Length: 262
Ligand SMILES: Nc1ncnc2c1ncn2[C@@H]1O[C@H](COP(=O)(O)OP(=O)(O)OP(=O)(O)O)[C@@H](O)[C@H]1O
Image (cartoon, rainbow, N blue to C red; front, side, top):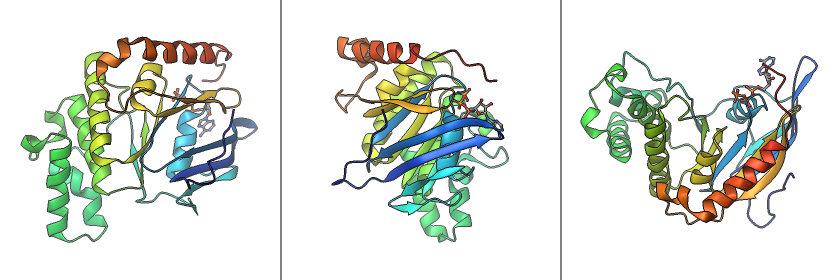
């Protein structure tokens, strides 16, 4: 069920009546969603339901066929510094050190050298990589590379952080460490975060609200509140409250047909 934003609380990010068609294939149909400032929201859905297409449109990397995306009430017309994007494959510059990767966007924005250094140091500290400031990406583990990518996005101080399956390339243990890291980072920075994932547990653990997408065409099937404490530890995944939410979401996703698309 699509939900309009509550009137009294103007959203940080809003998607309104959004459709996307490739040739004659309708990939997204009437998507409506919102994020309040400082919220952590996940969109969960099966492969091929249009999650990446939706996130790319929100990022301004693709255009909708109709409908709009608003940040603080202003329409998104293309990529912008108000949105930081994290991809599954880290997308770091291999020839730059960790510090230079984090500072890359800052030098392009004309920020003074002194402020660049200040932000680099601050975000190195936030992601726990101070000792690796001079290392190159190839010297880092997958989880560390993703923390550099997150620090680089945050250093630009975006209004919203968008993450596309950010831990999908990591092994199970590192993935859980990154989920814990992300919750702590979110409490520290209070960034507004929208993540897409096909991992239901990850979605529940990270978010305050979730949107479930159904395929053919991609629609918002349900909005689900996650009424769990905001101070979360991985053991939360073993509690009856967590398992009940997981059961509900699994059953909701099972109502969907199998994907016939690539
Ligand atoms: N540029 C494109 N041209 C034509 N069809 C496309 C294009 N991009 C995506 N699609 C189609 O849109 C549908 C949704 O793809 P999308 O990658 O957004 O889904 P997804 O939910 O993110 O899947 P996954 O989790 O596997 O990445 C698929 O059927 C895909 O083939």
